[in-house]
Image 1 (cartoon, rainbow, N blue to C red):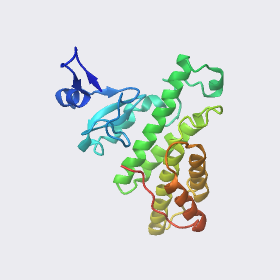
Image 2: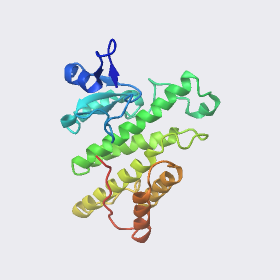
Image 3: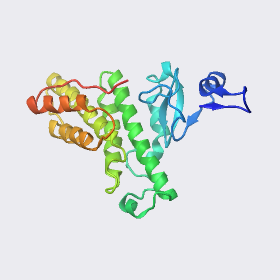
Image 4: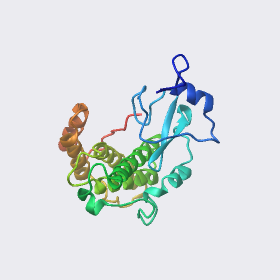
Length: 239
């Protein structure tokens, strides 16, 4: 979090960003902040947040986090294969043979960063959707990335990106609720790719795998869905 030429010359990352941040000269973080000073999704340095950008993250001002051009965000994450064909032609994909690679190999390192990046992109899209009345297309884009994340998790390391299960469950819940409202207004048939059974499966998987964070809220949501399986329960991702 600090850098400089010697004792007395150090400056903080906040100082660096305040002095150098310009919209036309992007700053990227790869591998996360060295020290997280401000906890929370896409946070690290007070006054700034990050937006997914491939296997890295682009730094933005706090006030601009929810106003970034979504088309640009999608373009910057095209390397993850979140386009129409869903392929990963620009990044190594070793998912069928991930278990064969040692932890020290570059293949497994890139693979791990790819999974984490997909989860971040899905997380961001669900957060953005919450801010615009749960826009279905934005939610669907986020859920697509989260499903791909879970699909790519190695069988021998099921807890590689545990948070993806939680975000997928919450995103599905919000999309199911939104579609239900739209279906009533427009008298259309609701899609079945998000349902109570799927929400419960992913929440239970998260509770099973998460070993460090408190799980009281998730267990309450599980109980609520079991008691009222057809209810439109309003659950959100934290800002």
